[in-house]
Length: 251
Image (cartoon, rainbow, N blue to C red; front, side, top):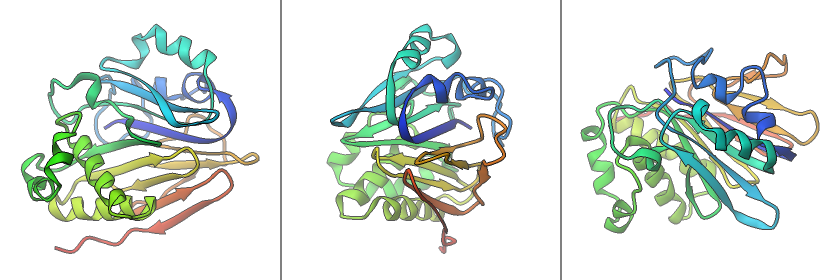
């Protein structure tokens, strides 16, 4: 469920990544080629991007299907950026959170998305939620599983973890509490992309030049796309991509 994409590289119009490729994120909203769970991603969408000289990204999110939003089409045609994160959503269950539940979630310079589902939500992860400071629980912008996963990542970051460690440890913690969860996470600060393959597909495209794309699935048939193995942490900059096996959870 859900499809997402992040980009680092030279300045491009958002549409060059999100609408123009033959199998763009927009097309993946109704015709994903590799999605293992669900078939249509019509329960919300969003894009976050970075402007020159401003570390805090802008966002555009809506609760409905991406293909019906003409403003999105106009925005992606004229807005340019050197870094972005975008997603289309297939909701885990019925909710009334609207665009608040649509990725990307944001905090300061960070953008975040979750492709997957927490098994047994919400009861399975109640102990993890209870361990968060009350102020952090009260700051949740939505009542969905992705919002709680984002809160768990943010808490680790406030405790001093680096981005890759915070993402990796959160995935393992949730997997212990809720086995069989699907936890493909995607996080960027505009300079680095951190992602996990845990239960669904993930690919990356490096180059040409200082340019990296990380996505749930390739947006075209370029042979340079590489598949990320399951149970893997990806850390990427514009110039490098590092893949690290994630430790298996132990009860």
